[in-house]
Amino acid sequence: MPKPKTRKGPSKAASGRLKIGDDWNAITIIALSQENPLKAVAEFVENSIDARAKHVTITRGRERGEHYLMVADDGEGVLKDADGHPDFRYVATHVCDSIKRRLKIDGAKGIQGEFGIGLLSFWTVGEELALSSAGADGATYEMRMHKGDPTYSVARRRTLIPEIGTRLKIRPLLPGIRGLSGDKIQWYLASELRERIRQSGVEIKVVDRHARKEYTVEPRQFTGRLLHDLPLTATPHGEVYAEIYLNDAAAENEVGLYRSGTRILKSLTALEAFRRSPWSEALLQGIVDAPFLQLTPTTRTGVIQDAAFESFVQAMAPVEARLIDLIEEQKRAEEERTSRETLRAIQRAFREAFLTLPAEEYDWFDVNLRARSAQGKPAENALETESAEALEPAVAESADARQKKFFEYAGPLFSVRISPAGCTLAVGRSRTFRAVARDRSRHAVQENLIFAWRILEGQGRIEDPSAEFATYHAPDEPGLMRIGVAAAQGPIACEAEALITVTDSLLPEAKDRTVPRQGLPGYTFEHAPGQLWRSRFDAEQNLIVVNSGHRDFVFAAKTKALKLRYIARLFAKEMVLRNFPGLSGPKLLERLIELSLYTEEHLR
Image 1 (cartoon, rainbow, N blue to C red):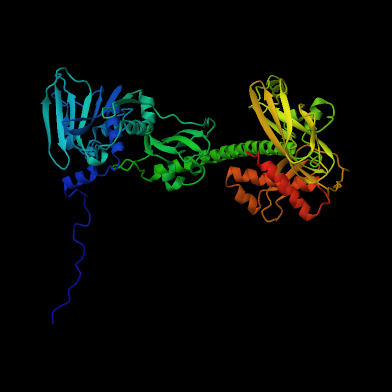
Image 2 (cartoon, rainbow, N blue to C red):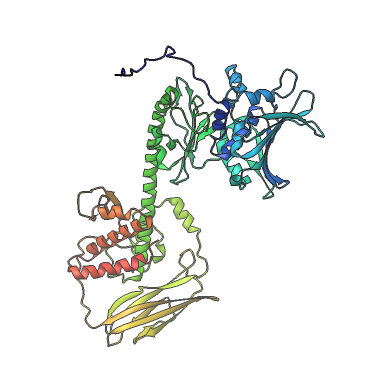
């Protein structure tokens, strides 16, 4: 019987040193790791900035049937070897061992590269890279590398005059990125290298020979209000620079994460630690630059979440708290502004409705109350002060605003309307109507006007048919009558119509007048989510209180237009209840429909 096999114990070599089994396979993986060709172009430009170039030109073109991309600069060129020649051999044989990293250790400033793999990203752009730079002897030398080929070659390139700086040329471009236009390159670099461009003062130009256009890369300009009073963000690893702007809500608002002037992430919310308010509010633009963060080497679009990253997250906490406070302040200010605009729109619509409806039927909320108060005298009839409708009831008007209106003279005639535009009249009775003429800005026009009143449909007669005020005498039989007026000012003519219901069963509606008449009310919110009331009228303050916790308000608040109509209907409900006390339910509903109809016509 065979003996059972026993598991062997660990070998004597229980520890060791990691090493690459296949160098070329590792280089291939690194070269193909850059997924964004625009990021590769940005790295080529950064190499030029690291070489202290003052001018960089990116050219997109086509020659000999091949698309190419070229980056040329006037920097210091490739570092020289002992013979004074560009040290291409070091560049090609020290992948992942950038000389820039050693220079940074020695104290060199303004250098971004550190991994020694930037040139390899040409694999994601095109098939062949040609990198040329001048030597100490004035001759130009060129290194060539091919995608998928482990070899490189260096040769002297003939030139008419010595070249300055470095020239990098990739051709032919990969089929998928031949449409990489000049404007796309410009916009990407403006954000990706925003701070590096500003700090170095480099001038970057993009020449698109396909489109026959030339672009200058300007550092991206943010919009909104720059926030100056943010807390300092110091960490044991270094300081964090924050330049943040508070803007109106928009999907394109993002705060990017940068390292030493180069963008790492388009938005901080790409990191789980910042996927919260205020960064997710779509109200902020700007940059947060943390030069001590460790990047993922291959893509250079990620952050190693080590101790430095943890201290960065903690240092941003006071900034987040301050930003949340500022956002809440802006939201409150925006709500107040929106509330004022909503109130003005609603009051304007109701003034227009009351101008159309019979004044004696809707006189509890006197639209002319403020105008008479401002003039210091009572108005003799409801139409006398209609031209003062621009005065906002329940809203104090400054002396500057009154002075401005003094100089706002009316322009030429633009429209005319009849006030009231609809009414009910008993048979055999009469009523006075007014023709209200306005200019394009809705100012009252009063000079050089000619009026002509006439009956368009039905019976009756009109007294003073050529005056601004005309009296209509109803016939002895009921019916629906239609009258019209034509207003002319020189060659300009406008027309308007009014409907009159003549009835033989008109009964007076008794209304309680123990409370003095008031101007149009304002409104305020009360958050009462568990209660069923939608609104109520506060007579002492002349305010309509709207329940902002009611499910109807929550639904209406989804859009500005729907919210405006909802609040206007609450106004109509409260004003009908206040204006017609004691009426039965059906009659109140009739009045509510009537007031809502004429109000929403002018609601905008």
